[in-house]
Length: 99
Image (cartoon, rainbow, N blue to C red):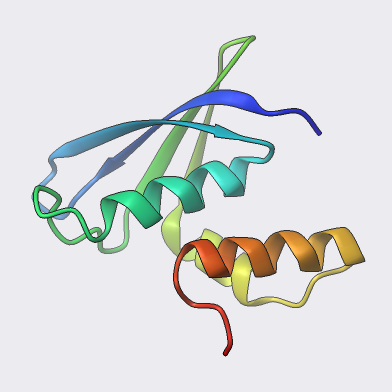
């Protein structure tokens, strides 16, 4: 897969939108990168059960992902070796990798 430029927008529980630019190979990688940066940031309120909007370029395509669906997918076992590697990398990015 190739890296795509992505704009990820997450609303916190105060309905404040937070936007970040990332480069990712997959939709869920873009979500993980954004969450790993935004969650510990002092300007971002609690992210609670919300959705994440990901604009992928080029071409411009917008995807909407529920955080709970992303976290559920991340907890599931990988279906292929590549899927297992991706999930392990994203867990590590989010600081939830097994020791």
